[in-house]
Length: 528
View 1 (cartoon, rainbow, N blue to C red):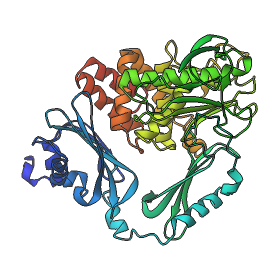
View 2 (view 1 turned 180 degrees about the horizontal axis):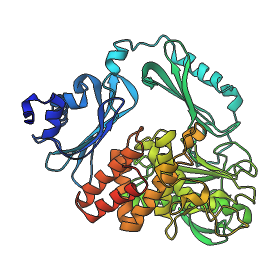
View 3 (view 1 turned 135 degrees about the vertical axis):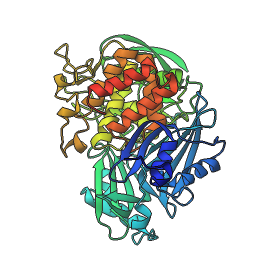
View 4 (view 1 turned 120 degrees about the vertical axis):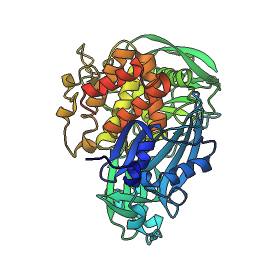
């Protein structure tokens, strides 16, 4: 039988044949491409209007009207000469939650990749009905009610702050909201995304979606994600460290103003075993933080500076937001508290109970893990549930390893202080700590936001295999580029593979041994 001519093929297939595709991923439910790479454009792209023209010409592939449906968020240029045009899909100017989409153009003006989540059917399902019946104030009230709390329940009096140091954002409870379109089981709802951040009666960064028409709760999850003078002090493990401190009114503060690129500072507080955040500045009278009670303070401050230096010296990233944000840590949180987390504003460390944990700020990889949650929040914005949530955890573990050379364990310095050789997790051997390392062991569960701390073992193992093949330096560059340029809120394991391969292609070439090493790593964990 004779093959069909190109002109007789459906328009989508005609366009895809013109694109010299190297790799592709498709969202089967939405029948739209979540990742395409290759030589996608025939004409050179020099400005944003030409990107819109490219998308319009290829409407049969992308299935959205770029002029009506896409809002440009920002244009980023990188050190390889690429320009990344970042969009969010919207309806009547109201953004669709998680619908981030990026067009990547190389230094020669070629569209080399597009990726993200598009909703081709959203406009027809929502139509023009994007006016809220519910007020934002009412939505916030309903969000509080849904978690059986009021704002008053979370109030903790703000501590006195010594002059002249005046930290910003010391509010104990934060309410944020924005109107958006939320996709719930294939149905699109006009909704308020209400974010409630507080530390009493428990650490929380609630994200609650309230239907803007009838006030029903569509979804909710707590996205709490598991610091100029020179002084010195001893850390949790008894090692001596040099500290950047600040002298004022005959007192030395753990307050680092030495990062020349940073518009903020690195500052460390103590909650004094209470639950008020940020607490009181960690201080000393002689600039020698040698007391046993100061060891957690010393490590939180020192390691926050180390992680800042890693991101700045390796990638040119200025703090977690790349704009010099203040990095704040609070230690001695609560009593016998076996946890550390990023709460959307700062890092919080418990002292542990002495059996399961000692002071959690005493591990560089733990501090790097928490600060990387902040980087992820400000870049890919990976949703903290199911595969994207497990990937969120894995990215933090992986950058914990990049920051803490020598092993592939997480938290081994502070976990079970009376027992040597164990850890919270292992990138090289996830099974040793109850995690799967391949998709055949993937755990389907609704607990722990869809198993984010369990299934992270799969991308963790892929990261280990990648690092073993190409080294931490090359792997770090690939992972950082993928996180900041190619991953989006809804990136799953398959999309992560595509993002990392594209980053490897950008940096080292699509036919390189480095590219093939990344491909092999994800093949071995059964993500194809």
